[in-house]
Length: 125
Image (cartoon, rainbow, N blue to C red; front, side, top):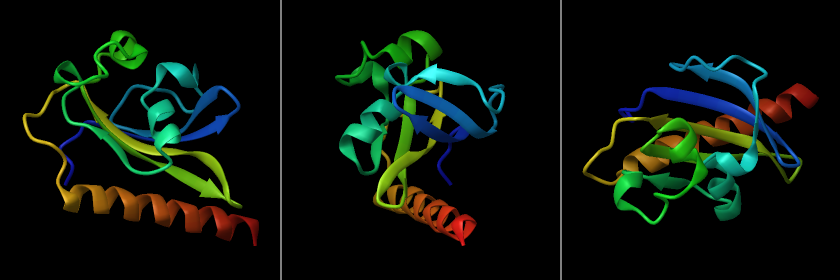
């Protein structure tokens, strides 16, 4: 539906980005990165769905995530727990796309994020 290669659910602790789940990438569960080298740092700043359809033609070309991981396409949304940012769910690819993400694709990511929010609430019960 999104045409992306990698899906990650992360947990954020301070300035640390911790991989909780990963599909399509070779990133081990529990891997820790500096939040600042991920596009998720931008997602957290926006506190909403954030996307880049081709980093090479965007204002984010100098972002450390592109330099470190060569990811050119990204969409993500914060995950909330108890009114606080818990982490992110994000999808990315090293392959650029000429078109922006559609409203439908953004809605899909938002629904995925909301379902994860609900599952986090259910874990506390």
